[in-house]
Image (cartoon, rainbow, N blue to C red; front, side, top):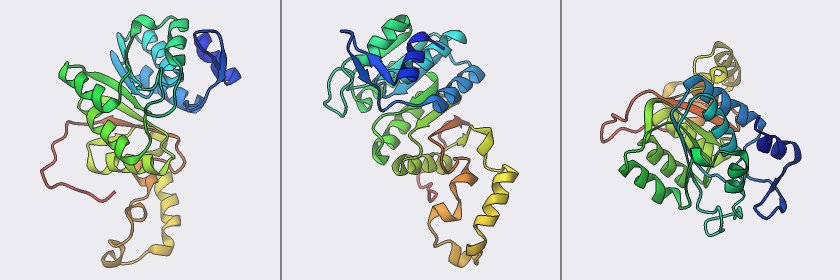
Length: 255
């Protein structure tokens, strides 16, 4: 593991450009880092993207693994790297860590909101094979980020959604799994895992009712998260893009 990233994970602190140490918050943890590394080593992307850089914990992990697999460029978007106009301000901590770790030449950084940066990347013809969405975690902003990232992501590429245990983000994950041509990438919680389905049958015994009644249940009861491959307590969910969007104009599934 890169020394800078290892220090952050060991101490929970990071250094700013002036040498001041500050507590790290709003960062992915070791479990998500290991999942991220596993995915990048499996799909070996050329270009990667993330929405939400903060102190650069995920950025360091992506850049290190991208270098390992022969990747060329990582694009990071964060409007608050030096200010707090859109949320927390990171006082340049993420960029400082990237420079300290020696990944400056690998990084393409955009200090602007994702709803401005992502369309410009599409207009420039940017394509990526992996994307991490870890920006503003309300449902509307996560769906907005997903829709625009999807337009940059190659078929066969992987999208990782951080903070998936938050209700709004989990709802966005359900939309992706039910309304778009994406499937859960985590093999432990794939939709037709027999262990998952056996557990679901036990959980659903109390609501074994006719379809005429069942159809009025909430989508989470009709098709639980586990059956979609999301995992009830997953802090991050990765999806693989199976094809470009070909829905008809009136397509919709409850989610």
